[in-house]
Length: 139
Length: 139
Image 1: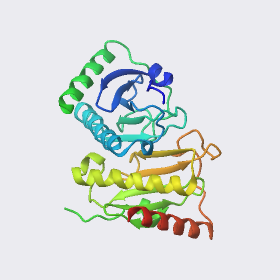
Image 2: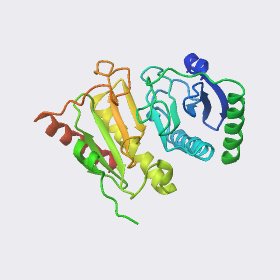
Image 3: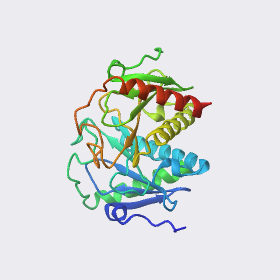
């Protein structure tokens, strides 16, 4: 048994927003889209099916929370929710707010455009807004 | 209130495999990957968040069933699970068996390659195999 540690690629590409009961919630450093990544803190999990049933239920609930937070904060035209993991095998779930005006619409975001790193103070405000929203809805 | 009817684009691109308690399970007509699509039979739903809590629980459970069926039948290197809906707004969830040897790996499948329609008798066998597996695991 290993202990859980966040994959270095995910750590490099994101800010930590919150730790929910099962998942760490991360903000992708790509200002093109409000883009969260949820990572269950379960060592060696690659698929949702690798989680036991209780954890799977927790994961779904936390994905819903993240989606609701993005919806409340950004009023997107569409939410995109996906677990792919073809590149980074550690189980992680994308929850992305999409807009008809965004740079990749209507394509999926992966590989569509080079990431656009956030500038300060935008990211500081965004992180604060997401933290407040997740805290209130998780309560 | 409208009645649920399957979006014509989804109907045109797929075969009907099974009707689970909430979702119709469809097989995408693309022999590049074993690719299921789950469509909750709820009129006007666009997001998982549009489902009430009971239906959302049902949807996640049926996504698990579909993923498990693909894993049992095809032993993929990775499962890809996603709800995007940027093109077809009717709520639908992709569950796709991915292989390091497949034509789009490691990219996501959407838009990566032109679909490769199934030939008979491959599709007949595939449909029968999926039906049998979903029936036994849903029981």
